Amino acid sequence: MARILKPAEFTSADTVRLARELIGKQLVRTDTATRIVQRLRIIETEAYDGPEDLACHASKGRTTRTEVMFGPAGHWYVYLIYGMHQMLNLVTGPQDYPAAILIRGLESVSGPGRLTKRLGIGKELNSLPAKRQSGLHLEDAPRVDDALVKATPRIGIDYAGPDWSQRPYRFVADLA
DNA sequence: GCATCGATTACG
DNA sequence: GTAATCGATGCA
Image (cartoon, rainbow, N blue to C red):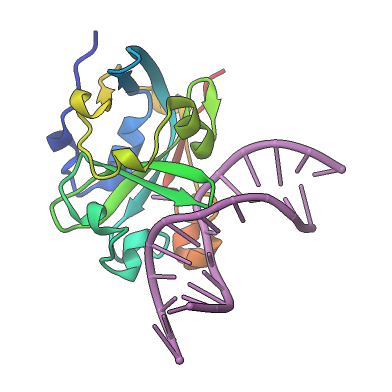
């Protein structure tokens, strides 16, 4: 079994780089009640980097919803979008610096809303640390070659304006 | 209290 | 192209 990634490993201020490095790592769901364990590699991520990033929820300030992004790295940020889809994010960066990485796709599961549904992820995980005892954690994996990873603009954030919406903060593993 | 807005998906 | 669906937010 692969090494478990600790929350403290995501304290780097370079969230965009962390989003790139998360590609290929394994997302592990452990349900103590049903004993079902799911282990899937991450193939798509997006970086949301700090108060200046107009696409980042925290750019509007510290609120009940965004509070977790200001907290310690390595905790889950889960929220509901469009009234029906749960989005899974990993908080990154130093304490009090609001940043997170949206996990958009896993091998065999395309789409951020679909993956949370598949793994049974909901708001009960919000603000919990990415540890085995929380029921959802990350495990290390060999680095995915740069030739297989492409960077593109983030999805669905045109409202953030051309400067932010066009930045290559989305990473997709081109598995073929 | 009430109106508006989505880090999406599925279907035509 | 557009409907579905509801918590967070902002304003009164």
